[in-house]
Length: 233
Image (cartoon, rainbow, N blue to C red; front, side, top):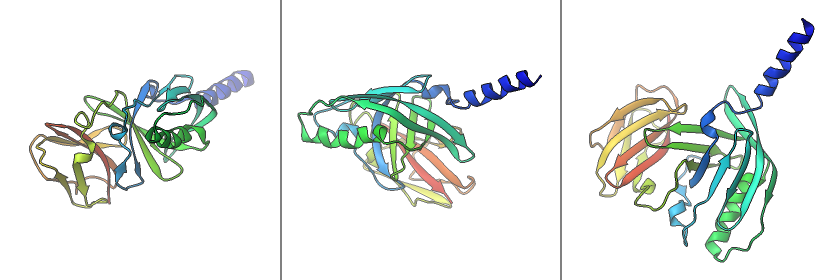
């Protein structure tokens, strides 16, 4: 009996060492990074010449990817608690090719350092009808966003054409666009559950009935989609 209990005990804690969400195990393409609750910046389509940075995460939590001109690999340690799920990169290695363009060098300094430095990164996965998004809150105060399909141009992903305010918000969230017609607005919880949807053109939505916490708002337009975070207070 004691032996059986020991096996169960070991199996349970071995299982806890791996991420529970199978959607994590795929290739994720870099979208953009933003300051914590700040303005977004470093959109992938703004980098010239164009690049397609990515990271592939396997079921064993090993990862490999490519930045602008260098490849990298390592593995994650998965942990979770009542406040969320975390990945801690270890055993990091990379190549050391010299990039030909200053903009690529600057990007890799940021992008590769995200995987190189150990420390827990809180992560969440959001699933919309067309795509999945992986977001990391780093220990330096930045949020790094990935998508499970490549981003080819600004017209394909019009993330910076919309502004939302105020943020945090208590009642009405306003949406400002640059001569772009809004086709649909969807709001998701951090777990990916859709909590609001409107298929009518609007410049504001009422969020007063939402519980306090962080949400994603996806704005669909004739020119593309925008995915942003806001806090309901």
